[in-house]
Length: 481
Image 1: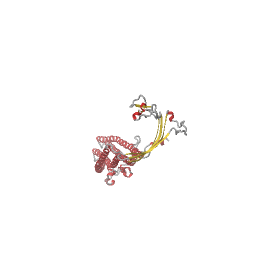
Image 2 (image 1 turned 90 degrees about the horizontal axis):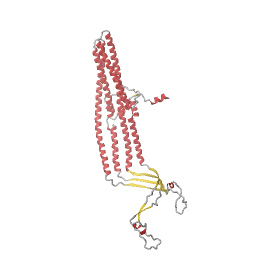
Image 3 (image 1 turned 45 degrees about the vertical axis):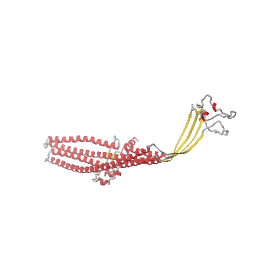
Image 4 (image 1 turned 135 degrees about the vertical axis):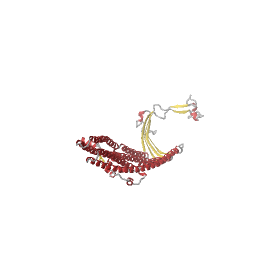
């Protein structure tokens, strides 16, 4: 059981280029974050839609007023009341002597007998947007924002593909160079042994043996250094793939499977700015900015909202009375009071908001958005010029890399031929040991130059595909054949 559990946690160990790219797209932290950003945008769209749905809330309040606020008033005479002239009238009121001792212009602070100390309220409020132009624009902007997040996710994926492809090619090249080191060491070691045998039999001088031994030692030292370089290139590939650093990784592709089209542009097709993800992102930003301008216009339009409130309220002389649902007053009392101490309340209506003047704030906000739109248009011009330069440069670099690769391939084959003939002549006694050492050194240099040129060609091919907006084709099996 434990063995199976451990294997389930192990990442795959063998990868083609396509599989390495797929693994990176599924496991890279940058790819995961880009996917999360897209999910955030989806949630933002749904949040914006929710603004147009009915908004329902419930609330309840229990309030205890230990000290009720007093009410303030003037004496009746201050409001124009005067005493009746007929004091024998039973309804006679002497307003002049109301509140004796208080001047006619004095302020009275009376006890608040209209409000009780304890009260409670509970209810539900409902509101619904009937018309709001900004909300309608917001729905469009939310969809554009989601589109932008999708484009940015794609941009992240393309960068991952480019980085993984270059790192993968680097490991492949180093593997081939390591094989060459082993072949060269075996060949020089064989030469060293045969020369040593010649020296033992008196057919070669000791200095010849020493010279070849120095060459052999240098080769072995270079191989040890190159092993460290190869290890670093593997670690770089693991980093780009987000592959576990403590697990071994094997590349199943070979250099022979990597296509090197002489006219890759013809294979890719005609160039179109819209193929570039950067151009697509900028187009979406332009769409968002146009919606921002539209929204600033919409802020000046009327809005209409419907609302309704339903609830109950009560008051009592003490806090305990708030929680009573029945009173001592009978239902059939002559005063018309209800036995239920919580009384229902309800109201509904519409609110119309008409912006009339904002101190020219909307005007200047609109101006800012228009200027921002101009900056985006300038960004299109800059992006196109940059893409044009990138396409021309990548085409030129790729063609130069192919020419260099052809030259270095020819040089390596010539160096192999020279090394083989020189060794044969030396073994037949018609060549010098020094010629053999020089030929071996020239061969190693030619091999290094060839694989450097091959790596440059592979990398420039990736850059050319990126310039044409076709980098995703590397994530297909046919791209390796």
